[in-house]
Image (cartoon, rainbow, N blue to C red):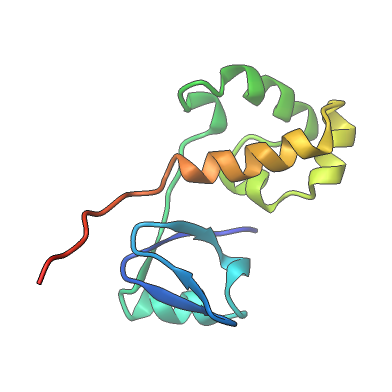
Length: 115
């Protein structure tokens, strides 16, 4: 099962990639086991999300996604876009767009710290 995390501080994700404070990401964005270690250190937190149908502007999409047995945010972001596209008769690029868009709902923007 896919787990969604929020970065509580700036993180290096390897290969020069950074995950900024407040950003959300799926556990597969890091090497296996790293997210769990970061959670124990207080550097990330699990994001608990409502069902997709409860999200603003997602009612229609949730009715489409349920055809692929997708009810939760975690299920959508962890799903194979091609399989979801086939099950819902929705273009694959649209499913990939939804996967990115739904994560953006949970991003927290923090003001830059001065000094």
